[in-house]
Each structure stands twice: as structure tokens, then as C-alpha cells.
Length: 388
Image (cartoon, rainbow, N blue to C red; front, side, top):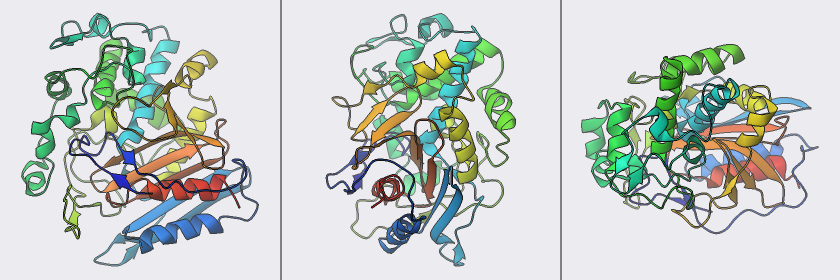
């Protein structure tokens, strides 16, 4: 199984495509009775295949387990460690959707509210009509709105030497939304599935309008602080990662067969914001997704909305064997079981956080290199949820 970025992958917080060759494993998705030796083997294999370092944390009724392979820093030889902070990419979308759905539960907005109601005049022209696009369309990627990260002009700023020239560029949400809207829509609202970071920028802008506070403030008061996520924060334009963290390594979209590897740890991620900007740890992701999947962050009605999914086939390529809800997706495993959660990528980092529907059995993982793709996580999920 391999992963490939198209020329318009959306600055790594957008669309991913998996090639054929899925892992096979028997049995249904249940906790392994033999410990986590298979998971550790998958970690070791990932590093042997070229990943700089990888970590995985498992939580189940039988307890917690942490495993690692490879290095946080290939120059010093520092090994991967628990509690390291890393950029989680589009896993951020689950946090954004949770905040929106809490506001729905409080009656401050509705999933059927239109973008025009909250952001009048912003989504109009060039084939767009904000009067026909609802908040639900934004959260499940059925709005048809173009992904700003796939804009050719913006994308080229993140490739090769251009990345160094633009690594500290700062963007406002309005700037990036306008870049997205300068491209024609994928389809009419509700006409398909088209993964787009622009959707989540608009959703967060609506959060700010509805609350009178910044998106970051709402994340902190509603999610980070109540759950005790001490290693999680939204950096905004802050270029350095706080606290212990692995070096983030990237090929910067090189098409060379043996590409140069770059240290991309330090950068301004305002380009990702509510779609992919959060920094976190495997342990904090365990706590968040355990609460989210377990129904401790949302009332039953909003929980049902979050887990009402749409097909992801038929539009721009995305992860096979998945269905998308509101900020989360389900993924069918080779053994026939299903896990839920979210994943994401950004420069130098791939993250995956998936578990059973009740949140009782979870696996969170991160790779501090962006060229290995999703095959690593497929192997980890099969090892943990499809025991031999």
C-alpha cells in the first residue's frame, strides 16, 4: 500500500490517495489477547521502510500501552518518546466540529443555518451562493467549495525552495477563504463529497461570529481546559513548537526518486488554522477522542449528527473504505471491523487517531516524516484491531 500526493494535495492538510494493496487480516475488530507485539512490529517495519520515527499509543479496557520506533532527531539519535508534541494536521477538524456541535446544542446556531446568515456576502459569485450552503454542508464536506490549499498559486509556495521563502508567511482566514472561492466549486451544495479545508475555515469563522470570541479561545474553554489537554494548543502564527517535540521532516513535494529531506519543524501554520493547525500529543488525542466517541463532549442529538455519514466516493480522491460524518470519519478494516476518528498530515507530520465507536478502544499514532503515507497507519490499525 502506498500513498501519493497529487500536484494539488492542498499543503498536506487535504486530500490523500491510497493505492491498491490493502492489508489482510482475519477476525473482527476486538482487543488483542496477545499484547501489542504486532503493533510494535508494525512500528519497527515503518522505520525499516524509511520513516524517521513513529509512535503509537493504545487504550483499551485492558489498560494503556505506548510503543515507538526510530528517532525524534536523526542527527542526534534521540529516540521517540511519550508526551512529544507534534502538528496533527487535519485531525484538527474533529476539534472544530465538536465546538460547532456544542454551539448547536446550546441553541446558538443550527446545522441548517446557511453561511449567508452568519457571514453575509462572503460566499457569493463565481458559481457560489452562500444562501444554499449550510453549516452541515461545511462539516461533512458536501458544500462543493474549492479547497484553498489546492489553488495553484498558493500550492507552489509550499514546494521545494519556495517553502523556505514563505515558511513564515502569515494568512488571515478571510484571505484563504477568498483564495478558495476564486476557484470554481466542485459541485452544487449537497451534490457530492469534496474534501476542503475552506469548509472548516468558514465553520470556525461562524463560531467566532456566534460567540464573540476567537476560535482559539473557544477551543481552550470548551475542549482543551475541561479535558486537561496540557500538551495541546493552537499555535496561530507561532512558528516554534512548545515543549518536547520531534523534528518534523519533509521532502517538500520533491518528485526525485531519492529526495532531499528537510527539517520543517519551524513554520507559521496560520495557513492551516481550524482545518489543520493544532499541536498535540498521542496521550491528549487519546483523551479527546475517548471523550468525543464516548459521548462525553456532546449531547445525544448532536452525537447522532456527528456520526451521520456520507459516502466519500465519486468526488476528488480521498481515503478508500471510509464514510465522512461531521469532523470524523469511519474506516472499514480489512477484517470487516470499523473504526472511527480522524487523521491528518502537514509538513513533516502524519497523525492518525482511530477507535471503536464507543471510544473504549483507541489507537493514536504519529510519524515525523511526510513521505511514508497512510500505509503505516493501515498496518497499525490492522495489528491492533484485527488480531491474528
